[in-house]
Image 1 (cartoon, rainbow, N blue to C red):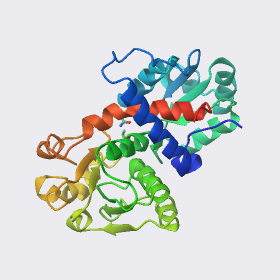
Image 2: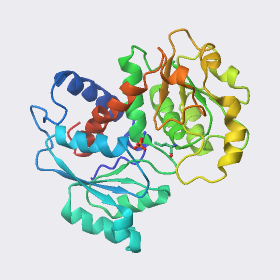
Image 3: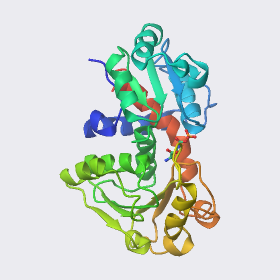
Image 4: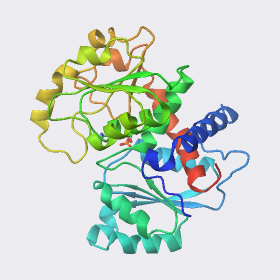
Length: 308
Ligand code: CP
Ligand code: NVA
């Protein structure tokens, strides 16, 4: 059966644990090498990944490209606006055609239903490179970063500040799979997607919602935020006004555990969801997190190809 990576739950905790272990090993094995040099075993030699972008991207695009190079394979980038998909060719037909031409498809799009449709009609693996609903590839990199910085996932207290968005949804999935707890500091009207929060709770995670951002952060092991206005969202002014009290600044960060980590998937809007003092401060691991997109994506790729 074709393995798709549409959400973390679809892969499951065991597969994700295998990906995290593989990412750590591969990262260590090639430390100091030129970034474009293939890993010694080049496990995806001859494989081609098509990447479809219906939204902007820097990290996802570069990390998947570098991941494929390091695994010995290659990529084709399709900007949706310059493809027939952008002129109305159906997702189903696009899936059928690409399945005959390439070995896997990564797509960044808006409606999550589109990625499900693509997967339903593709005979090659489909990977979620972000939808309005979730961003699972990002969270594999985030978990890798947290582990690398010496924190065990079970029992971890993670504080999320700001918008209840797609990145938070994937964090909630991970919480349920790895047994950590999520405190969400979010203004009314911008809450997390209950479908993802409920699954985390049903798997035994504590998920709490706080209108006072300080309550969310007190004693937290990891503090995470993201843009207040995700790609495709409207109502920018109202969103910024509502979320301003949830800015991660030095005062708020000081309430977390003394060794707490700060994560942000990037791009950051400095002065909005996070201050310079925090993102450039001693607790910030955002550059490791960004680099880890490569190592995490390599393991996601190896998993969809049945190598993990
Ligand atoms: N974090 C992330 O997905 O970044 P890009 O939008 O640059 O891909
Ligand atoms: N929540 C953000 C993440 C960007 C990587 C967005 O969807 O725009």
